[in-house]
Length: 207
Image (cartoon, rainbow, N blue to C red; front, top):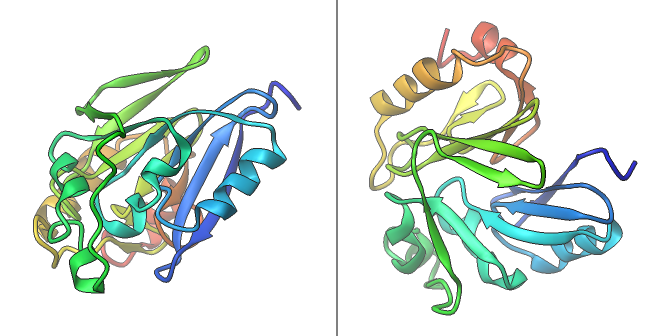
């Protein structure tokens, strides 16, 4: 079990965002999109005796970033969405009457398209997929694709927020995601998991 990478999904916050904790029990882990309810996320970390190395944000909206500073580690986000971490207007928290700005003490690392991040002896690929936001990314790690709010099970991300573009989102999915291995398991920012093969055939926004 110790050598097996596990993926734990934690549904957090009023918008039912998916946070993922990925790692090997008793060893290193990373967190994707800790958007709320840090206590629930920390319970998973304790359950598996994880040592959290870093946080990755698939994009900069409040329901995916609110607990970025809760784990005492650095945060990775695409360079085009980094400004959202400190802009309540852009990260949409202003509209919820609870303006959020990331803790100044949190180290921010900027991601770029095609970048690889090391995780132990493994590595993950950062795929820039603008459309939901200008700096949205998907994360390919092993047989998993963490798609944020780019691609959902039988749906796609909203494009009516600042920085959104329906045309860009469709192009991102078709030109950057649908060229990948169809067997990849997709772990989206909201809702249940799916596969690229299923979405190619059955997603009404893309067929």
